[in-house]
Length: 219
Image (cartoon, rainbow, N blue to C red; front, top):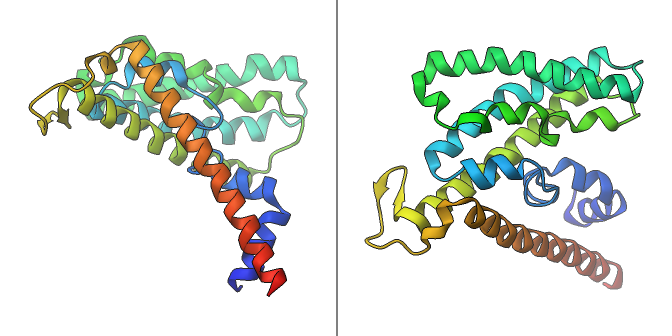
């Protein structure tokens, strides 16, 4: 497929293009605003971001796959109960796996790991009336997971650098540029700035495609 056809198809099916690009155009954190509380409060360093990312990787896609198979004929009120229940069960196994792998380090985020069980990032699909196929639930679950991990690690790394002058507990700056980056207000503030820039870049990309597509038509 040449560049002209690719761009035209992307614009023609823009909603599908956005939905598929979970890292950039529909990032679950910076565009959709999901999992903000765990990130703003608990993702204060690269280490804590890694723990959050690992937990999401272990529960998001499995929860989506299991619920897509079982809830096909359920009403939305019943799904509202069932989704968090499945998420909680999977979380229990994931929490134990992380404990075996990381030891007590897995407990360092306190309640901000268990709170993921009911976060819209994990259970948002209960409100959808459209049936989701097994394959699509895997693909979309993995896309959301990768999108979250990219956002989580970026936020954690940036906050650690600004608050402590370190990255991965390795000293890279001699001063603390923004001490408030460590607290929850600083977390929400940084996420808001990144989200605004991310959204701006997403709109610029769309405008760029429109201009490029028009240039092909005028050629």
